[in-house]
Length: 240
Length: 135
Image 1: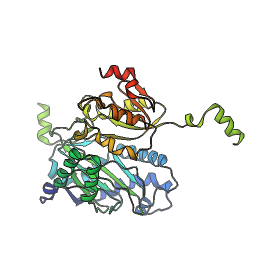
Image 2: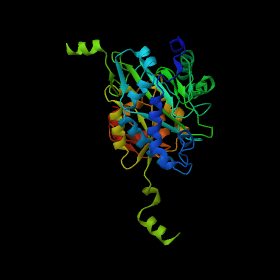
Image 3: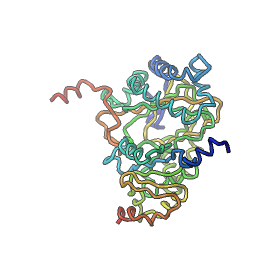
Image 4: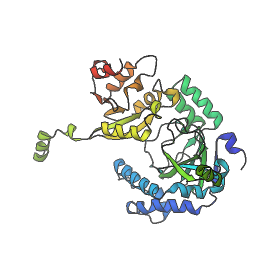
């Protein structure tokens, strides 16, 4: 691994084992099939749900799919997909978040998460694996700030307020160009901004957080985490 | 108005039939004591028959000023706001009455932990139960 992650706080990487991403996408596609005219997976996701489906119905669909992804323990699959890269970052003793997160962002939907950073509410020792299930580009994506720009944005938040902070993130955030089969791995301390999707396709994605078993938690504590893998020494140490 | 609509309107005024939509404001200042899932449960219960349609949490930098929520207000189309606790208004130099009144001019305000509801348009300082909490 080069020093990109250390320098910027994020990196875009191809999956070490992309078959697991197909598995996750197929899980979503399976539930989506009744809502789409398209049979090919990528076209189905890009063109769904139908514009006629109300925001409340889309949210109900998202919740149903999120539960299915949680039940399938997709964190294990995501870790397997990026095994070499994540093990190099975290080490052998790994906690993963308990619940899956699924994002459906239809064109023109203004109901987007506000500009924010995950840590220090989440642990600053966590990594977020941001996985598009459709190719992401321009506004069908997320804008991420580098470590350096995050520091500047937080000064705006502190000294000039939320509107200036958002403006800074919109101006200096890098739109992530991530094709399906790759992911953006980013440090939880980075500020990120979700633009309104102004493209003609829907953005589908999952994101999942991992950290070392021994790393301190953030303000939320460890309650949203569960063990994914413990190394031999750690297992022995816990036997005492 | 069609007869069936007239009857419906007589017994169930339309504005009362629609469940209220709330914006949920969890307290990022007490997450160690009350984890986020518990705050969500308490806030969902405080919503009653209504629905929480969105939520936010303050960054540590804006914990005292509630700057994130203030920055998002003009984007919101909700019937009210549910906070986890009254203390979210009490982390600055003094209780933030002006912001509470600003919210009340836009909708009702509920506090899940303390079980307090203040109706839209009321003056925050006129709530005796709120007053008791911040004594």
